[in-house]
Image (cartoon, rainbow, N blue to C red; front, top):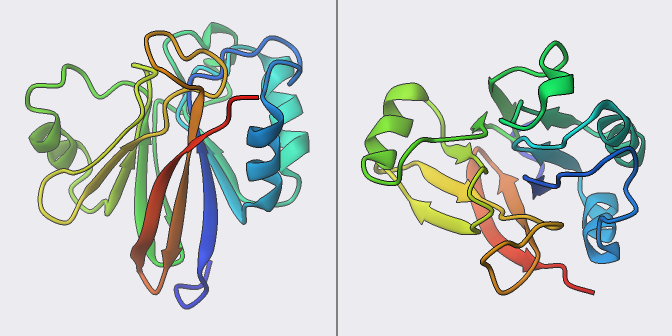
Length: 172
């Protein structure tokens, strides 16, 4: 995609859906529909849910990586992925490992990435990692676990840079 166009990117992880999107909050569906591209950092759960998400996203770019619970999707999804959107280099992985040393580890794993999108913890988190690298976990729109709210993320990208990012609460 051209680097001079600003894109709104919906970011999901840890949706843990089975077969359909019934448990995906309406606010998350609205964010996906409003987005120019969609990223999912793993734990979709099964082929039916992945196919339903793909249908919802439609003809927009949709990138998904394998999560630790995506046993049925092992042959369909990569463990790690690097893509370029609006001139921004984005790396995706489900599990970044332990929190200690995460920033340096992500720079080693993805030395050219401007953004690393990840999941696994269900904990929404956005922070500057190694200088110039945004680490972004959208949390979970379906399984909040110890978090106060169900969440997802939105990245705004343009001109080869991250224009903005936010964690969006999608509770009913």
